[in-house]
Length: 159
Length: 310
Image 1 (tube, each protein chain N blue to C red):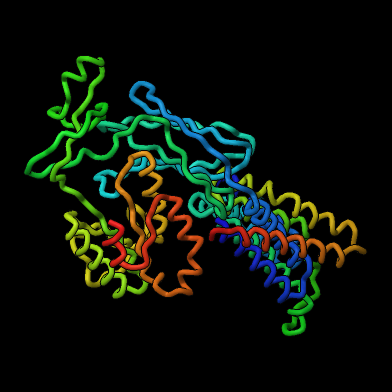
Image 2: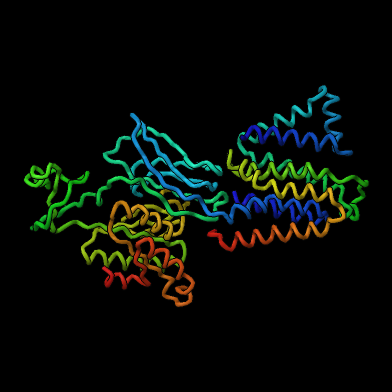
């Protein structure tokens, strides 16, 4: 399971790097210097190496990259910094990164089970984009659903 | 593991709020959903059995359909020289049987098998299961010098001294029987001390309890949580969260000991709650006391109460 998490992290990171208007400079320059596919291979090797010992770290670095892209495209940040206007990262990539993080939070098939348990919420987050007019009501409903689940769970928790 | 899920959700919510990005905040629902759904689930109900297959032991754990994490281990005494094997197995949903095999170690008799099941995010725990096997009543009692009186005969159990076998009764029935005698038995008591809070008060009460036990004829030793076995209470120590049992609340120790004692039929346990002298604290701990009593422990509010209880 660990190599799979590492490989998926590498793939997701490459997709995020290559699709971004600014961050794509890294794959372009590395590929230009070392040959086509060098950057992808580098990401793959690094992620595989990290994930054999720390799969959560590998998955979390993928999410961090997604957060960085979201921050770069944020209008809030543009108020403080002279950043160009950038498109937000693809939500599907964010969903994949979070699912990967959930899968890596436990060992082996246990992580896979947790990721599958989270799949309905991931599907809802993706479906939300298909109905933009329902954005806020759906967001509110999902938030309340999540909150009530956590309250319910912690009420019966033994710590 | 649950902490990882909640940390991921917290990071996403914080980032979403800080960057005014709804999509980012909504992503936090994914780990929250995985946590919430599983936290609400009960752990799987389990039953266990164990059998010898050649030079190996096969453990079979049967469970219901619910997913969960099973901890399977031999309940070795805390002062065992070798730590007993211990496994952690995730049981996926709908899988009903979990099998384990391990090489048989040289022991005169098998230890009780304990299976603890948790739900997938460790918020709920189900009490352990044991192998249905004949167990010795306790470690063979060491006897002191003095006059012994015959009381009765009972069936031979592994560990009983050969000299106690009643050959006449054994010849009549075809099964081994031993004589049960009363006499100046050397009685041992272990004072388990959780001195990580209210240290001086706990140490004083533990010393008092040991004194009372000595007066009653017990050989007293200490087991200090986070420190280990001791013949006397250590004056100063830093609890280390290692060892067996691991650094935990003393109630965990009492709970696990009582689990074993159901099988091993060992002597009663007394839980002296030093902080329980405070009525408000005692009120808050009523549920804990009930759990301890259910485990077979006698709950006391001070070491002096031990004198009466004994």
